[in-house]
Every structure is written in C-alpha cells, then in structure tokens.
Image (tube, rainbow, N blue to C red):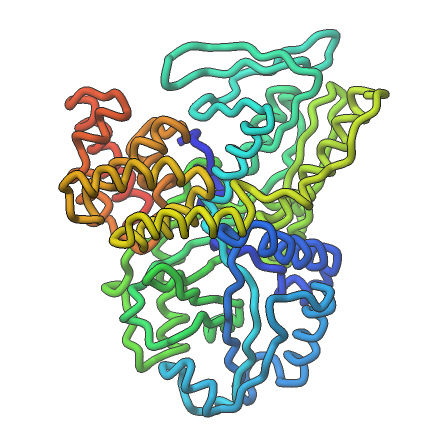
Length: 496
C-alpha cells in the first residue's frame, strides 16, 4: 500500500510490551531496553501507550510452575527498574475465576496479575511521523524508492515514484538510511544486486472477537494446549484481540494473507483452552496478518520465536545504512543508534547536541492533553466521549477537530456519531496525507472492533464528504470502494 504503517508497523499485536517471553531466551538486553522504553512512553505519551493489566492463569502440571513464574516476574520487575505501573500480584484460585470465569476449573491453582502496555500501532507510527515533520522533517507516503543515486560508488540519494501524482523524483542526501523493515533486502539489492539477504519473514496472524463472546473480564496470556506457544487475549476497544502465530514465510514481502492453517491453529488452541466458551470461526469479527522482519538464521533450522528481536545496523561499502530487526517499543533507541552511525558515516566533525527525545512528548504532554480535553468537554458535554477519543488519537492536534465538530453538532446535526465526524475526515485528509479509502479506514481511524461490513457501511455513509476531501470524482470513489472491498475479502476475511 506504500502508506505510513501499511507494513509491519500497522499489523502488529498492538502491544508496547517489555518482552516477558524474551527472558526465556536470555534476551536480557532487549527486555531491559523494552521495559524502560515502555515505562518512559507511559510517562511521556500516556494517550498513546497505556498501561494494561494481564492475567496469567496457572495450572498444576501444565506450563511453568508457580515458583518459576514467581522468579520470572521478579526478574521482569528488575528489568524495568521496579518502575512498572504496578507490582505483579499472585491470585488464589477463586480470585482468578472471578476475573476470568471462562477458564477451565480443573487443575487451576491460581493466577498472576501483571502490567504491560498496549498501543494503537497505526496511530503511534503516524504521530511519530508528524512529530518528525513538526521538527523540520519532510514525510512522503505512496512514494516507493525505485533506484539509488551514486557518485564514485557512494550512495548520494534516491529516485522515488509518486504514485498519486504519477511523477518520478530524485532526492539528494549526505546519508541514506534503509529502515524499510520487510523490504530492507529489496533496497539493499538496489545497491548490490548479489548481496545475501539479511531478513527472513515470520508471519503473525491475529483474530478479533467480540467482547461479549469471550467469558473474560481481563486480558489473558496463556500457553497454547496445542504446542505450548504463548498466546494472548487482549481486551480492548469493545473486543478481544487474539494471537499470535509465529511461522516462517518464504515469500515476497507484500501484504500477508491469513492462512487457513494459521486460523485453525488459533481456534483449536482457544477451543482447548476454554472448551465451554464455544468460540469458533463464526465468532471472529476480523482477521489480519503481519510480517516480522527477523534476522536471517544463516541456514540454521531455528523456530522463529527463538530468533533474537534485537536490531542490527549494517553500513555497506557504498555508505548505505540498513537497519533490520528491533521492536516497536525500542524504535526510539534504534533511531538514536542510527543517527550515531550516520554522523560517523558522513564524518561529521562539527558540534551537535545530544538526543533529547527521552524528555519530549509526542503531540503534547499528558497535562496539556488533559487540559485541552477538559476545555472542549466544558463547552459541549454532549460530545464528551467523542472529544476523548479525538484527544487520545491526535493529541493537541485535536483542538481544531473538536472546534469544527462542535460547530457542526450545534448547527443542527444532533447525532454525535454522524455529521461531527466530518471534521475528523477533513483533518486526516488535509493533515495526515490520507490518499485512499484504505488509508482512511485502516490506518487513520483505527477501529479495531469494526468488522468488514461495518467498515464498508461507514465508507458508504460518508461517501460524499470523503470523495470531496480526497478530491475524487464519484467514479473514482466507486473504483476505490471496489478495491477496498477486494482488500477486505483477501486480507481480512477468514479463508474458506
């Protein structure tokens, strides 16, 4: 799709976790960094990264022993510098069943409550891009790189194609960084066609279930009864996000299609874990898959789950800088490491200030966001819930959206779910570079709990204002609508 967050960054598990499971593979450095970054962003960007409660049920003779879990949780607290949102807590059997009445009773001995964090990965990516633009950067979407420019065998720029305008451009640069995730090897081969791959793809498939269909009151992490792989059910936004698979996929890095084997594995794991819940394919609201760009295993037959998620930076003889691996939660640290390498590559000898991103909020501080929200709630309490969503989604950029939404609402349109949303559509089309219907619904709105029919219904409902804002004719809108229908059928529908 070539939009911001159209790849891995928008198809993740939507967790900003510290990496509890990486401790099993002795990934101490990665867990330490991820835990500290999670805590940092909860403090700086709580509207985007929110602390979230998880329950780990414990069964006699199944999975890790209570003593092992206790040791692991203590180590996890140490990794976060004892600064997690709250300290973990062990529950009795009765307390565990009260929080998760759908759990099997037999052999249950209790549970462990602990905090991690969730994120809207699409919004996190977009807000990061916007923050870069606010600080002097230039962001362009729908513009794939088609060639690298060279001078004396050194990379000095790129050629890219503007898919919207149909024009090819060249951009010159002192340094070129290839941070393209699953497409990293494709860009590396523009520099050196015979170079060996750095990336191997692992596919993760997720299911979305209606909140009312899952007999849990809290998010749960458990080991699949099928193969003992860690799985999670995250309660959020009126639904449960369930996943994920982790399997090698030797294919082109286009949008991954959920496979029948992936879906059957997840459903069978859930049926065995909660047999009385009667959760089958008919209860699935939405499905999506994403690729993880993992480091190649150099011919070793390793399980994807055991491959390190740490980032690796490569500097080619041409000066092309490539970064692969890493996690959403450690992106800030990866950026610092890349910029350090850029400075060395271009032999920068002048003075430059140290990184300050550990002190900066994205889109406004928590206090500024709270004050802005309170202002608009006082002015129009009827739209209080919608204003809360807007400020969580856009930070201080929500100010103008709220003003326009209130104007529309008080002008006679009394349904807060309908016409006031025009203000939001206007904003994302004019300020967030939404170019297609898919951009708008999949990555700007981010309604995880909407099924395919709901997504198409809302597009049809807002057809006129959408094609006005995207500067489309009715024929162009209908063409994009059909394209999005096909997109949903191929990438977000259960395989037959």
